[in-house]
Length: 395
Image (cartoon, rainbow, N blue to C red; front, side, top):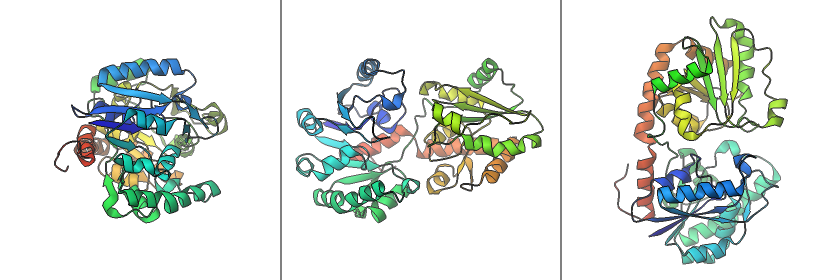
């Protein structure tokens, strides 16, 4: 059985959903990834030749095939691109099943609007869209109109089923896109429990390496430092409260930084004598467990990041803004602060900093919760069962 995953951009070393679908696929399933040559999201240091070398390693290790197509619009849009020769490539690969990742992408809208392929191959799709991504711009309204009036009809007529990745976007598929409930499946975003685990020794060694005393509070942020993630909100929240700290607190930021964003928003000055700011470049995902193991808790002040699941898998409490998806993900392992209320964010940070007992309770609760609900190996098996690749009892 040949399963074709179509994803606009793919990096073999990232921890995205498609990486785990490829890594944990069932024996006997031939997995093919059709993606683009775009390197835009992976940093200026990575060129196409380097990316293709990583492709070869990934193909060899996980027994999959990766095909890359030229991309248009790569420099004009923040996320969407136009893969050239997409329909021809699908025909040449001749899949048994097509999994079209991200229903709202240009690639998905093109294929779903052009109906012939929908009746030649069994198609599935998914969505990662959340309500906080909805806006009133003309571009978004046109995008939504096309999904409701054109894509919806194609999906219903071809009986194409779409995976929601959180309950929130299951409601979006039903209430905003108009998809019938019987065509909505569920496959949550998860985490790799083999890669993300608590390792006290590794955490202590990293603290020593970074010269951060074990007795001092360490608050961690991992991910991109840019205007979408807004990690500067943690600085802005804590700056007025630096004198309330009885002992030093270290705010550590790990990830690729956008220079324009740092200059405009990420102001490290005037933090007070007890607040120490540390910035580190992005690290390989298979080493992140060391950072989560050394921290006292993590803060992701904006958006819905999958890193919250990885952190909890390492027994680390998490603070995020309150919304439907974050409340579900932090049900046992974290605190949610009122969206836009930096005083509430600061209060939650100060609360956990002063409460080692609560941190321990949240850490254990979050780890158990993530292991029971968000184990990618189980998620992939259930997804493949929903695709009809094998029989598997419901989770």
